[in-house]
Image (cartoon, rainbow, N blue to C red; front, side, top):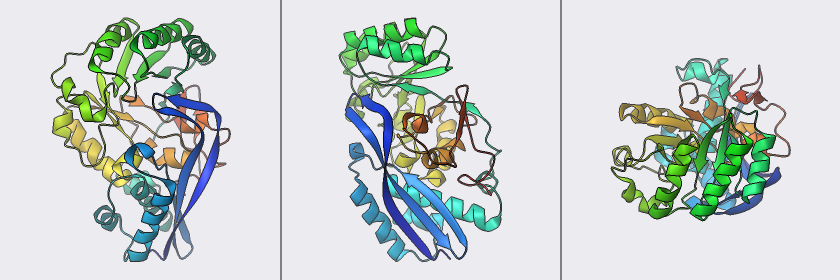
Length: 330
């Protein structure tokens, strides 16, 4: 029996402004949930995202309402009681962490998963002028995988891509347009992206206009991010995309994400494990999905001025759980 579920807001300063096609921010606003049962405590973190109509205030209220009505604190109860989104994610991950500590075993054993191993994670080059993006890529050229934020005017986006590739000739590249292009823009950028060795074009069109992608023979695989939200029919997305970007803040937690990944694989999707900009408390549950993912993008803590003391370990372009003491561990 979960005796109490509490939530609080936190704000974490970024190391530098984070710009995408929708705007720029300098802080990561998160909500942290603590689930307590006697001497055991579990934590979870989420990022309320305005793109999906979420706010910190609304998320706190949703969690408070669930906590007041909660009877057994089970994850199945949570799935029925709250819709997909940031609030459910934080509670779900806190309940996983709590159960792991109650039972004295790591979360991956509870979930029937193999222990997480260090995996290559993307590092984000934010949207800026071509020269600035090239310079940022040069500073990070030793990283094995760079994620390039585009979604502006297509001609300028091609300039940005060329500047990045020139500065980081050996890095693998993926691109995220954050819904910023039209179909004409995608058709303009895709051939150049293929020429430059880009391995993925993520969310090129707005989620409400991506039916135009159905049956498209794209020169670079297409990934669904904003289109993969709520209870979307994966069979519909399978006509438009080859890769799904699974983020716990969209699925509403690890419980649903595990099921979604299993369903997606039966439909032939490759999996990308993504994140919002947040601390390691948000990243750690997602790392359980990363073992067999085609792409991992869990660089959120690298974009902060400082992370939590029990955070993930980042080294040589890879991310791993800490040896002990972090989320989901004894």
